[in-house]
View 1 (spheres, rainbow, N blue to C red):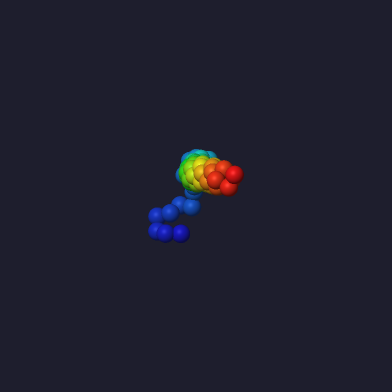
View 2 (view 1 turned 45 degrees about the vertical axis):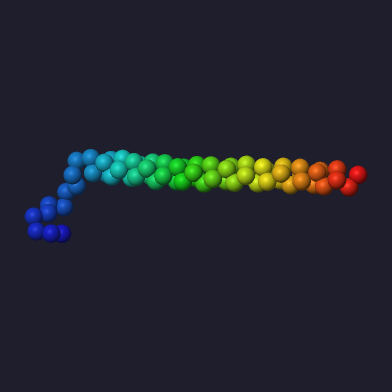
Length: 69
């Protein structure tokens, strides 16, 4: 203990600590959800690009088949 400490806890010490811990956890959870949401949006965008690319390749293959006939 430091000089002047009585050893007594402040009123609401444990309850206040719990509320701070809950708030910190909520903030961390919100940050993680935000990061996951951004990653999901990037993955969806990449998926759309890949689907477009596959559609273009299918069209090219179809066009090549028409040239052979």
